[in-house]
Amino acid sequence: MNYLGLLLCLSAFNLASAASQQQELDNLRSRIVKMQREMERTNVSKSNAMDALRESERAISDSNRTLAELTQQRNVLDQNLGKLQRRTQDLAGVMQDQQQLLSKQLYRQYTSGNPSYFEQFFNGQETNQLARNLHYYQYIARDRAAGLSNLRDNLSELQASKLATQAQRTELAELSAKELTQRANLQKGQQEKQLMLKKFSQQLRQQRREVNRLQRDESQLAQLVKKLAQMLAQRKSNSMFGNDNLPDGRFEGRLFTQLKGKLAWPVKGLVTNRFGTPRPDSPVLWKGLFVKSSSGKIVKVIAAGRVVFADWLRGFGNLLIIDHGMGYMSLYGNNETLYKQVGDLLVGGETIATVGNSGGNEDSGLYFELRHESKPFDPITWLAKK
Image 1 (tube, rainbow, N blue to C red):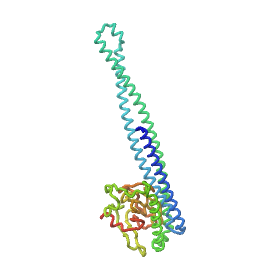
Image 2 (cartoon, helix red, strand yellow):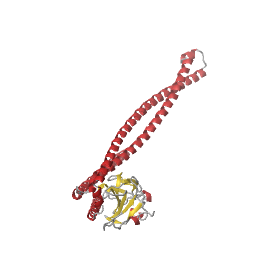
Image 3 (spheres, rainbow, N blue to C red):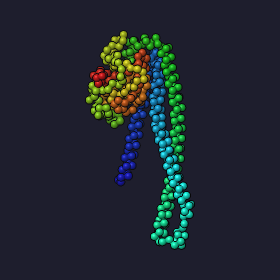
Image 4 (cartoon, helix red, strand yellow):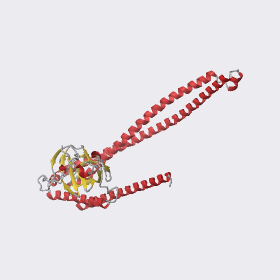
């Protein structure tokens, strides 16, 4: 097989592999969504005040994520537009110099009359001088032809640059329209949430201390993590979802188990509730940490991994679950915005969410858990000392 054939085969293999991985990702997303909806139908009660917040808090998260994506696109377009404008200015300057040079050449030709070879021969010029003049005229002719060719090329490039600039401006205008729509959606979601909070304020306060409700919520989360672990275990032979050796760029590629005591905190704030301590006015124990922090503050993933859940869950609001391989998962709850979606591959320290009070919390902050083989354990022993 020749070199070209080998390249074509490798290219076809890579395309097939990418298509297979995308199909696997789509299947995983579909199964997770189906599982989530089944759990909602089984556990959700219409009278539950927490669940009344679900759609508005989902909408707020989706709108903020879309706005962040649009902002990123706008930044790229702005950079491209700036480059195009600078190139247009450079081309205009080059063309102006070329036009001036051609004008001088034409003027000199006009004033000199540019006598022909025969005129110079019959005028009795010496052979050497005649040869030098002919060589000079040929040089001028080639230079002028090259100048005209470059001018035409630059003119074409200038026109293309102007068209590209206009296209970028049109795309920016469309982005601005989308941003306005998303901001309207965000405002609507925030208003709906405030209405729900006002309507169910008394019920929410009561439900925050209901032992049965807290136990049901924790049971639902445990069930979710267990099912996710089972789904991932079924794909252990697949290189996309079965790779236990997920490196963390922050710690030079060491395994998750080697990061104990070195993991960066997902958010800065005051730890108001610790693992194993009782919840307020309840015998139900905390399975993780609650880090009190201001709304909108950036939440970062503690280590490299892959997003296996990104949705609203009763009692935990907008929730992200990250698989770190080797049976380890980290959970980030009560967020205002989820920036990542199922299947996204992360490096340590990457921004994944913003702090909020979704899920009916009174205080703004992050609920954080670490689990191994679906069982929660104390995160404090794994996080770096402040």
